View 1 (cartoon, rainbow, N blue to C red):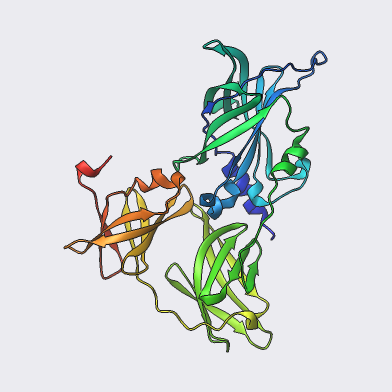
View 2 (view 1 turned 180 degrees about the vertical axis):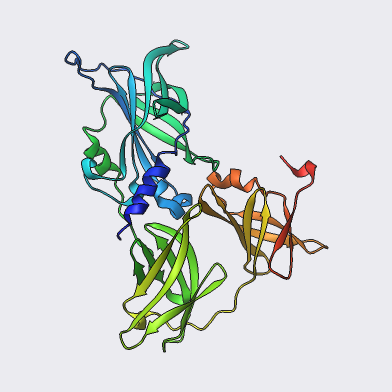
Length: 375
């Protein structure tokens, strides 16, 4: 799958802001080789991985980190965004960021135990930002650290990452990339619509998954009579598909808000319309409502008489929660999230306990929880 150059550039920009770390646990023990005067070498090195299903909607945020404690007391951390599935050598790999973070380190002793004192930060025009410090210890010959990384700066999503390593780990950046490279496994489908930088995986039963690059950004339904009449429905919006039965092709356009106000329009085309299953038009499972609360616009989709989804754009990403709901005597809905990734907890706190009063014009009004219910 080909990812647009602008998406690769955006990935690097987002990767460059994902860094608030808290270190604990890693040490030396073991002597380093003597070096020539003026030569700077790696004294200790560690690697850690940020991954998980809750990052599947923005796979470019997935990454591996190479933390190097240098013999001159400096720290260099590189990042490889393996979620873009770019396995090129480091010298030409747009998803490998050498010097992602900088810092200093020194040997120390805590409670009689030898340790490494580490400070890391990002340099912006020579100014330190996102500074963090910690102490690293040796654990039975394996050096390990727990680092807390903010996935998207300002969005409140963090990930505890386990770093392991020692005096030797990777010979060079190419070995680091090769060790952390991933292979993209596409979802099951009967056929696909493709566009530059995007793919729609058409599945049996009237569902379709829309991908931007390697990230699933939407789940759609479709209806097709097999005779050239087809629609795709995404987020309550129905899109007419243009079918050319003579050439056995089908196409439609889809606008995706990739980051904040930045959107792109995908012109999807299927080269084998006859492979798309015949599926009758589906009755919408429920209505879609929108409302504003906590300075964000929320979209509520009623799926059935007990379940729903609610989501908002946070830090440039569309975050969606699976929920159940209960209706009170006044017709207001109280939501309870289910299967929520731990990283989403701070975002859910923004509306936890809020009731939603639905209106006939598909708007909704947020009723703030009582003070005793707020955190």
